[in-house]
Image 1 (spheres, rainbow, N blue to C red):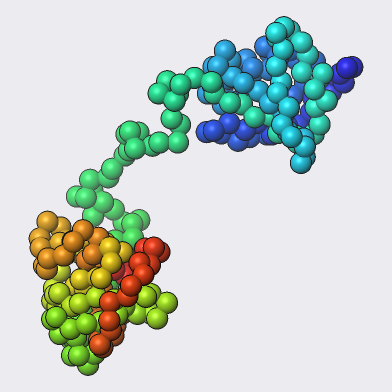
Image 2 (tube, rainbow, N blue to C red; image 1 turned 30 degrees about the vertical axis):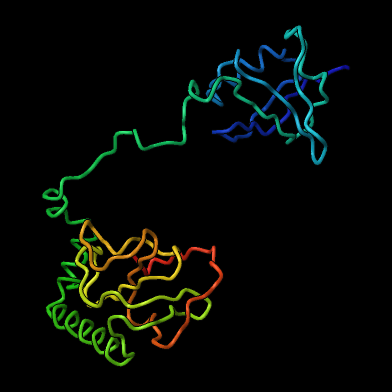
Length: 248
């Protein structure tokens, strides 16, 4: 098929990249692969190309003779060219995993001397722990949390269900008190031995055991999420685990 001379904007997609590039129909398959290598990180010799136009099925861009012009595949503006890496997974570079990338960390001592930080703003405006009345406010919050425990009748070994009502989990109170292992959390927590393994732990937090239960049958919540009552054990396992940030 005859090819046109002007470049065509197309979408280049691989497992680790997606970008728009202008492709010349006069390029050979070999030339296209060479130009896509720095774009996708996939070596030319390991590329398997295909083109997808609108809702049509993908069509391989391949030929025993890679000097064939890619214009033979009816390139259209903003069609998708997918680059598949044929190398074994263990030999591919992982450009999305940044865990091994060295990161800059500002020393705490230097951070505390800066004048353009959030810490400096809080200090200047007496916010958070720099508020002279912060300790008093914290004590009030802790006192209110203990009142919540008392008002709701939360006691060890009592049967309960978790709130809101859309959370169908039930269990038995296993612990009431402080849990220092929960970051930034003050006041009492209620440890619940759940009837089914839909919790977060085995009654331990930070290596310290507060009550004993099977793995994934323990959870710590605030008293506001507890309703005490004669709730029987449910027969069916609710498979939907709760990922709320308000429990640990």
